Image (cartoon, rainbow, N blue to C red; front, side, top):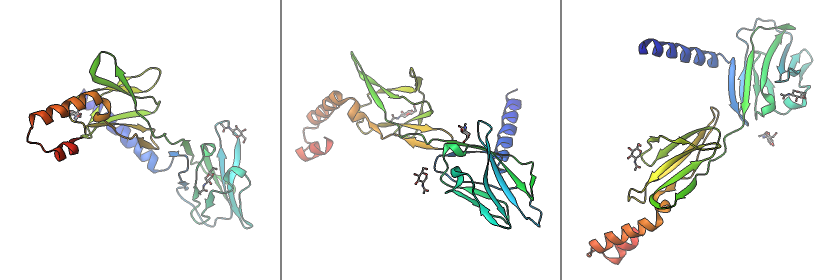
Length: 234
Ligand SMILES: *[C@@H]1O[C@H](CO)[C@@H](O)[C@H](O)[C@H]1NC(C)=O
Ligand SMILES: *[C@@H]1O[C@H](CO)[C@@H](O)[C@H](O)[C@H]1NC(C)=O
Ligand SMILES: *[C@@H]1O[C@H](CO)[C@@H](O)[C@H](O)[C@H]1NC(C)=O
């Protein structure tokens, strides 16, 4: 059973990957670039029109080429659209959410069957970890990342940590006092097209009172420690 499941998943993954490579369904971040091209282009080519249909079904010409040259009638495509009339390839740079939709190509006034779907998503923000101390328990604190995207928590070893749901949105982890002030935690956001990681939150900033006690103990025990070494510990 598990093997069958695994095979099914593998087939699905291979299928999805193959589709993405052939340029049928593409996801990009705002500001990115994308290119679509027809599978085959039979010469002689006398005209090319790339059309764009947005989420409301409104169809406009993105770019056209014929014996009179290139034309970009729609404002949305004016500054960022290039067409290679030899290969039929369209390239859109500096994408905005408005460029999302379905692209089709007419070659010699004949619409080709190929459909190119584009989703343009905003980049994730750089996350900021919120710290929540717990009254009556100075050994643990909650670290919270309040975002709707996929969240990945890591500690200083790079290991992925198991988090809990935070309401109304996001996730939290419980950081425990370990006695090593250099341990740290990060939170990473990922939305398929972009990823951002927070600044690290160090244990020394989470358990300040405890760290001082810890250092004092070290200092008292190691009577031979010079003030200079102690200074380095601080
Ligand atoms: C589609 O384009 C029309 C005309 O520019 C616009 O009014 C409409 O809001 C667009 N729809 C989406 C989902 O972008
Ligand atoms: C990209 O688009 C944004 C918004 O339309 C614009 O402000 C910016 O100048 C553009 N950047 C480039 C490199 O064209
Ligand atoms: C990091 O996380 C892993 C996995 O939970 C754990 O085994 C390890 O002790 C942690 N290390 C530190 C320094 O927190």
